[in-house]
Amino acid sequence: MEDLLQKIISLSKRRGFIFPSSEIYGGFGSSYDFGPLGVEMKNNIKNAWRDEMLRKQNPPAGGIVVGLDSAIMMNPKVWQASGHLSAGFADELVECKKCHHRFRKDFLEKDKCPDCGGEITQPRKFNLMMKTFVGALEEDSAMAYLRAETCQGIYVNFENIVNSMRLKIPFGVAQIGKSFRNEITPKDFIYRTREFEQMEMQWFCEPKTAPEFFEYWKEQRMKWYLNLGIKKENLRFREVNKEELAHYAKRAVDIEYKFPFGWKEIEGVHNRGDWDLSNHSKHCGKELKYEGYYPHIIETSGGADRGFLAFLIDAYEEIRGGRTETTEAVKEVEVMLKLHKSLAPVKVAILPLLKNKPELVKKAREVFDLLKNNFACQYDEAGSIGRRYRRQDEIGTLFCLTVDFETLEKDDLTIRDRDTMKQDRVKIDNLLEILKEKLEK
Ligand code: GAP
Image (spheres, rainbow, N blue to C red):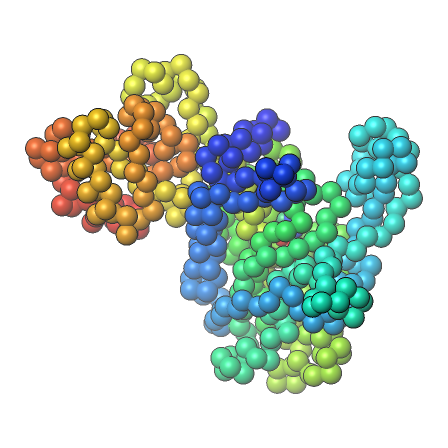
């Protein structure tokens, strides 16, 4: 199964989804860059999340969800109040006495170094906040932190949001953005990195309604992954036990995905009670209350990168013996990404049958121009038509349009469906409508 991860890493680089960061300088720790197709797909994930959270929700007692985009660097007092500077937001670090490699204590199976078998040191607490200096002086007074979770920007804006939007409880605030944690052992490709993107929604409600909303949001979030095509058998809930709960949480349920390296969290749903608003009130001296009480908070906190990896792995299929029409494919293993139509980075590929026939190329270019403002399109004329179909399957393209000699006579072309492999001839005049219907259905 680990082999599958290697295939995903290799596909990601080969086809422009994810590159190791600063590769020409030997890379940089666990940093990755999203390439041309990766950024399209990640934006599709984020747009699907925004659409779901801000527009499609219909919670039991009404209430809307609004957006926010708060700063990454905040007043350091925020992190004092949130508890992130205390031992609660620290991992236990151990070091090998022989090779000096460092590990998270809870990741070790034995009390020996997994790299060289050496003896390990006693654990010490290692805070995960990423530090930086703001302004010209590198001294303590100029020290700031990069946010470790996006939701703190929501809590500190609670009053601004309620007042400016005239909101009544219950309501939610959703935000997508980068977060940073000085992870001791980043690993498993983009699964655990020091810089990552979160998609978080905070639901403010009356204390007595919090358990009911917890159940509501938990189900909604699971449905989102299922509706975007992740197979049911690869997803599950896991109740986080008391000893494992984050310092702010009264209750937490993780949504886990079955990765090649095991069942792992992709999103957490948390009942944060009044932890955040009451602590910020104490520290800032302003009562962050609503009609005399601290609203309770139900949080849904997903990782855009972890989601990306889960969607990619789940969509990956290998077809032995080939499934495309040409004989050259027969002995090869074909790779295809069965991504959900709203997540696929390219929706339509336009292919002239032969690239050395100017009439075909001209016509195919015209079709590309006709469609490119409506859908993410790719024009491809290099190599045999069979190879081009396979290249498109490998990146999850939904429809391939082939311009052939008949097109020149009849003004129609073939449209090939990624999943059914069915090919139909359609009039170019009707193409835009047909594709719109297929992609919106
Ligand atoms: N505001 C709550 C919070 O941050 P969390 O469980 O620490 O909760 C939520 O993180 C989500 O953020 C995780 O489920 C994961 O998807 C993502 N995440 C957290 N740490 C990450 C890391 N080091 N690399 C990639 N994603 C991470």
